[in-house]
Amino acid sequence: MIDHISAVMIVKNGAESLKACLQALAIFKEVIVYENGSTDDTPLIAQSFPNVTLIQGVFLGFGKTKNKAATYASNDWIFSLDADEVLSDEMALCLEKLHLSPSTLYSIERSNYYHDQKIKHCGWNSETIIRLYNKTQTAFNDNMVHEKIMTKTCAIEKIAGELKHYPYASISHFIQKIDHYSTLFASEHVGKRSSSPTKAFFNAIYSFVRTYFFRAGFLDGYAGLLIAFSHMSANFYKYMKLYEANQKIKRP
Image (cartoon, rainbow, N blue to C red; front, side):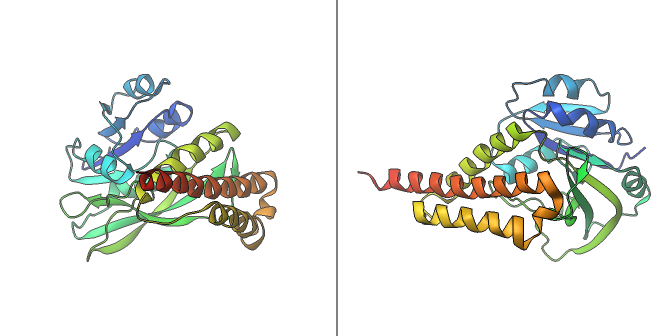
């Protein structure tokens, strides 16, 4: 049993993946699920696990919301993860035996999947990211999207094992996330960053070419094409939404 680290996540409408995520966290004595505005069975699924504390609050942007969720944890050590991620047995065992140093941050290896297929290209190949930290020493930055744990002067140590990431459950899920993240991007950069339909168009085209050809997405088959097209769409809509938002604030 891991009783010196709290697993903490924020989630909205994560019913499709949350059960598998929480089942893999059975080794944790405390799991904090900060739910923000779900319209599916996310709260019911969370409440069905005896080690889960369900908190229902508002979304403040990814960085600020993750920091808010961490305040509900009884431990200073926070293992941050998302509802579409599944902890491997090897990593759970490593966390249980890990000797923690407050001045150290701990990174993990995350592998990305579409359904049961491990994506090896598209820029989706395995990545190393910091996920375990002491909340008295550091926190996430305040970014609306693409939030990161601030490293400050901390040492970084890698934990063995794999965190499996299932970011999209279906094509519809791709579309929903594109809409959500492009809106957040526009909100974060309105009035601070320029955009235009031309910029949106060429960024979208370049994003597809980079993902499918330069990053060899074609080697991932059907999934590679889907990912490349979603990257193209996301870049197009985030810059078009930013353009519209900038136009609105220019009007008298």
